[in-house]
Length: 278
Image 1 (cartoon, rainbow, N blue to C red):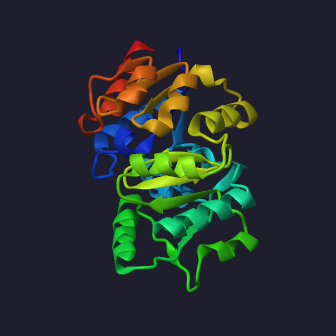
Image 2: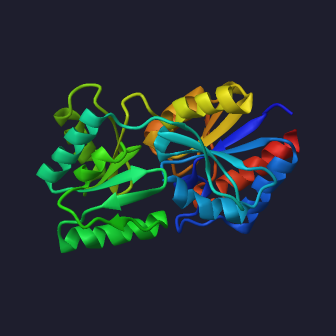
């Protein structure tokens, strides 16, 4: 066939709005793998919050996964612990500045490592927001009994820092203006802002993963996405497909826009169509 691999974003693309994989989507992804096409996941989610979907998919081979919006790549296995392949975290100086900025602005910041995420909620409201976020991500964060997550800088530098904020797109713009140029890449998400290393994004890590570990070229794959953090990935892919519910900014750079949304099982339908034309 024409395509050797598919790269799937999870939230609001492959998953329904209630963060589930439908039976039709599960079946289509399994069929694609059986047809010899490499299935790759690429998500903003932490490693551990992808694991339940890997278990549910139960594919024949471990699934190469780009997580933390490109800060790391790992092989995820339904039965075994994650095998870390590549990681590119924040520098100490960038992490310090970001934590300070979050404290100054009253944002609840979470410190993300491949093995888990830590947080110090300062108010009842922050704790409430955090619980909503944990539910969405399907991952519990460790509440630290300390003054600041900054204490973790001496233990291990973070892959990313996330900050819960109202109006993430507006706040992300403010955050970019407050950080020195090149300190970090700031991404606006559904209910939070993410800070990752300056040159890190899903597309770049996908390219490294393909070249270094999968023996693939990124132009041999089809990528599906919906949001700002999918722009580089859809641009680099041989074919970049934006789901119907995608942001206009992504639809502009996509090779094409699917006629279906995530809740209409866009990815399943597109993969079925791809298999029929093989």
